Image 1 (cartoon, rainbow, N blue to C red):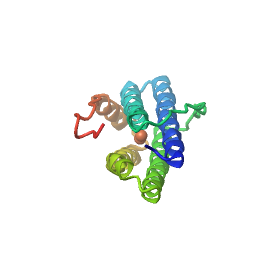
Image 2: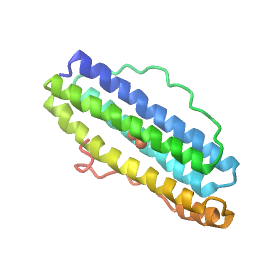
Image 3: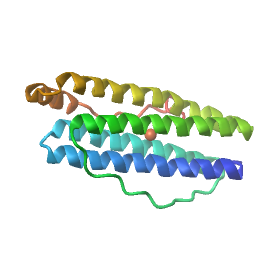
Image 4: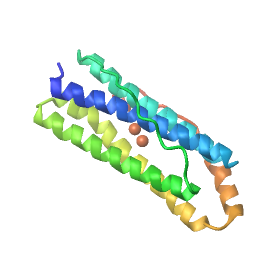
Length: 173
Ligand SMILES: [Fe+2]
Ligand SMILES: [Fe+2]
């Protein structure tokens, strides 16, 4: 069984993951408006990943005999100054989520909940990837600043991204 504290915290994380999906959905719309369909497509995949994260948390609560408590999801911002600005916000957001995941790990330790601590390790690794990817794209955007041609090529490249849900076992679901 999940302790009450742990249950509340994971429910909070379900909300945070769904907020992430919502944020990236807003970014997908923004990129679409800027005629950057590749960036928009990349963000749409990001939405799917965040929904996947939320579902993993949701399943964990249910598997452990907990109760889900689904609260309202905040509205995301809808406007950014530039693609660079979007990816700055993306990296900052992912860094914030990493902090939330770490706090969950510390709580699981305090609550002596080994199963949840092990479950969370997948998210710890996932956040390393999320931050690395966001900072990689941010770095490229800094390089191409002022060059529409380079941005166009980047848009094409990012449009290649596909969603691949982790295999069972690997996902720890
Ligand atoms: Fe996530
Ligand atoms: Fe994320």
